[in-house]
Length: 196
Image: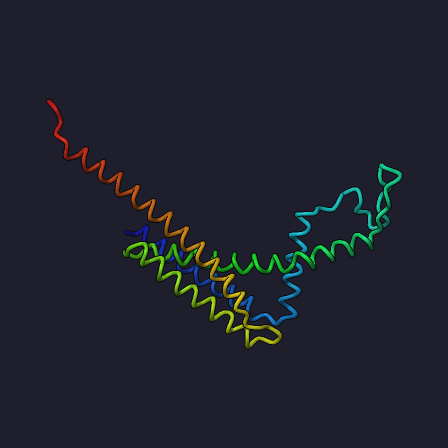
């Protein structure tokens, strides 16, 4: 029982922190939100397309081992990277919508598992409440300078909500059934008479 209460407190705290994080990101004016998005996309691009350490001198690119290959200047590299970021940014923004609501819903679903109710009811409550928060988040953005309320963003948010709530509730139900089966086996062993 103490474990369940501790889990409820921890999951509840993380749920509230996730909600605050989402609210904070939605409250950023369009310019700041765009800058943050480009910065994150730049980091992702750096992981996907790491710079060649031998080229990092800050001047003209090192002469390639193939003399017939064209020499790429730092300016050309910079333009190429900016083009990649511009192309990648909308994808990263979509993934961010799904992820932030999946994480929020994960903690909300864990919180919900600390209450005694059927897993389908639990899943439905978590899905509806997190979906309402996703909708309210987009409505909130309508009132932020330069931001808009976009139904496509609500759909992305709800996708994250659904995936996360379904996974947590499914894994919890599998865990619950395994624990019940183990308890039945233990109970059966206790009730089996011992041959003398």
